[in-house]
Amino acid sequence: MPGTDAAAAPAVAPPAPRLLNVLGCGKAGRAIARLLRDQGLCTLGDIANRSLSSAASAVQFIGAGTPKTCADCMDSAGLWLIATGDDAIAPAAVALAASGRLRHGDVVFHLSGATASAALEPCARAGAAVASVHPVKNFSDPQASVRTFDGTWCGCEGDPAALAWLEPAFERLGARRFAIDARYKALYHGGGAFACNFIPVLMELAMRCEERAGIPRAVALDMFEPIARETLDAVFRQGIAPALAGPVSRGDAGTVARHLAAMGEWDPQVARVYAHLGDIAVDIVRSLGRVDDDRLEATRAAMRSLAGLVPSTDTPS
Ligand SMILES: NC(=O)c1ccc[n+]([C@@H]2O[C@H](COP(=O)([O-])OP(=O)(O)OC[C@H]3O[C@@H](n4cnc5c(N)ncnc54)[C@H](OP(=O)(O)O)[C@@H]3O)[C@@H](O)[C@H]2O)c1
Image (cartoon, rainbow, N blue to C red; front, side, top):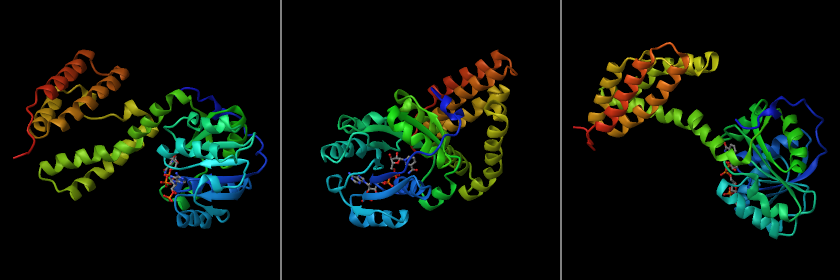
C-alpha cells in the first residue's frame, strides 16, 4: 500500500482535549465520539442528525452532547466530525462552511475509506484544517466496536495541522495508524471488498453449485465450514500462495476443464467468475515455481477458452 510508514511511528503524547461537534452520528460516528470522550480527548458539544430522535439516541449512546438536526444551528467547536454516509459528506461540508461556525484552527475530519479529505475543501477554505481517518472496522454494532476498537488499523490522510491532533488522538484510542495517499483511496477501499465483502459472495456461488448438484444448502454450508475456516487460517498463518490448494495449484487442467464445462452448461456467469478467479490463481501458483509453467499455462488457456465458449442458457433444466 502506498505510504504506510506511519504505522511504525513511536507513540506520542495525547493532544489537548477539544470540544467535539458531530454532523452525522450513526454507527461509526457515535462509536468514535464515545471513544474520544472516554479517553478524555474531547468534551461533547452538538450532535446533529437528520432526525432529532436519532441525534438523541446518539447522545444517549455517547453519554453527553446536545441533540440537533442541522449544521447551521450548531454552536462553535474546535473539532468537527462529519460521519454522514459517504455521499452526504461533501454537501455536509458545504453546509458547515456556509454556517459561519468554523474558526481558524478548527479540525474537521471524516471517517470514509473511499472518499478523500478533499471532500472537506469548503471547510478548509473557511479556515479549518481537514483530514480523514478511516478505521478498517465494522461498526454495525457500535457498542461492540467501542469494546474492540483497540488495535484497529486506521488509514489517515489530510492537512498536517489536522493530523497533528488526530493521529496522536487515535493512537490513544489504540489505533494502528498508517498513511494513505488520497489518490489511491478508492482502490484501497475497493481492496477491502475483496478481503471482506466478497467472501460471502464466493460462499454463495459455492452454495449454488452444491444445490445444483443436489446437496441442500444447509448441508453444504456445514460441509464447507471447516475447510473454509482452515483456508482462511492458513492465509494468515502461512501466506496466500501456500494456502492455495485445489486443481489449479496442481496444474490439473483436466479437472479444471470438467468444472468449467459443468458450470458453463448450467450458468455461464458462474463459469466466467471461475475462469477469472482461476486466472489469478495461476499467477499465484506460478509465483511459487513448484508447478511446470507449461502445465499452468495450459490450465489457464483451457479456462479462458471454455469460459468463452460455453453456451448461454438462462434457466437450468
Ligand atoms: N459502518 C461502518 O462499518 C464504517 C466503517 C468505517 C468507516 N465508516 C464511515 O463512517 C461514515 C458513517 O457511516 P455509518 O455506517 O456510521 O453511517 P450510518 O450509520 O448510516 O449513519 C449516518 C448518520 O448520518 C446522519 N446523516 C445523514 N445525512 C445527514 C445530513 N445531511 N445531516 C446530518 N446528518 C446526516 C444520519 O442521520 P439519521 O439517523 O437521522 O438518518 C445517520 O445518523 C461513512 O463515511 C462511512 O464510510 C463506516
